[in-house]
Length: 209
Image (cartoon, rainbow, N blue to C red; front, side, top):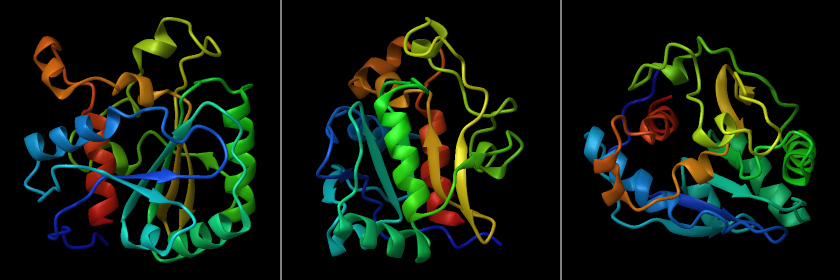
């Protein structure tokens, strides 16, 4: 059953973790904030926040965005908070900025997620995530980076997820949305189709399911 729409101002939160380069996609928050304001009626804070993953503040956010290029190793405190976060119904959205299945971010982040939240499984492209606001008939939209043959030279047909009670607790992408959405919102006027629309679905899902 869907939860009521989140009515307090939604604040886009980037997870800061002690290992790796958590701040590798600094333009993504402003771009997705603009899209949520543009395409939905969700009240949204005009600026995002950086939230240490090992802090109690992480538990206050329905959605946490985590990305990077380098190895990910959660501290004991980060792992403890993340376990509580997913148990309480939060959604951790992890995007591999390398978009490389053999890369160090993908390998280590998956290991850490398995240790803390459980193994990632393919998320069916028929999942409600792809229809909760905009409709994506073929599942997660491809990015120009994977289509141009960067990273692992693969176009990844699915995202992976850890489900809790049928709900996505961890969403994992090898598609490099971090690069795809890493531009100033004013540049949207040059796009025939706004490529951040899938990010809106992630936000809507996190706030309503």
